[in-house]
Length: 173
Image (tube, rainbow, N blue to C red; front, side, top):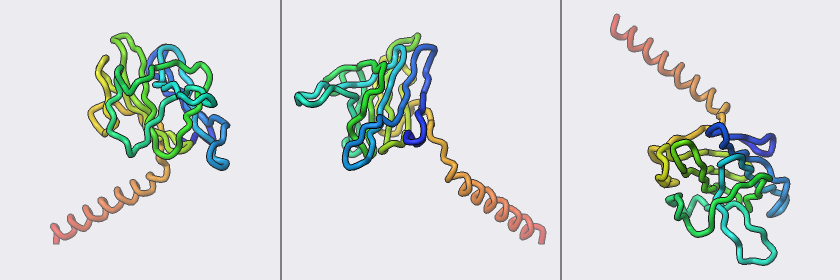
């Protein structure tokens, strides 16, 4: 889902949602940073920066630093709500640690972004259990439709049909 064109909201309960959008703030050159906004019991990991000219914002991990276990003890800082969009000051394949409360307790997850594209959103289904940014047995909300992959699917299904037809002809001959 390209955030440059629209925002994308993931709702996880009656009172838990994350909205990802274009922050409108440009960083390196003219490239805009993504941002995240929360509602209800949704929170994003935040590290207070020691630099006087920067505000604390959502923590983002570069993919090359994965795997990371995201849980209550994750890497200092704390989890914070963002009623207004918080700019994620990092680009190019990053993980944003998430924490939210459901009826059964606190859950942990992450959003993976690449520039202004939301690549993946995943969370642990068991309350109180951390989540590893490596692929694993967690629920993944696939917010990114891949219409470019549909032609490949049709080609694959067509190729299977042709192969099946040839096999039937060879068996009947």
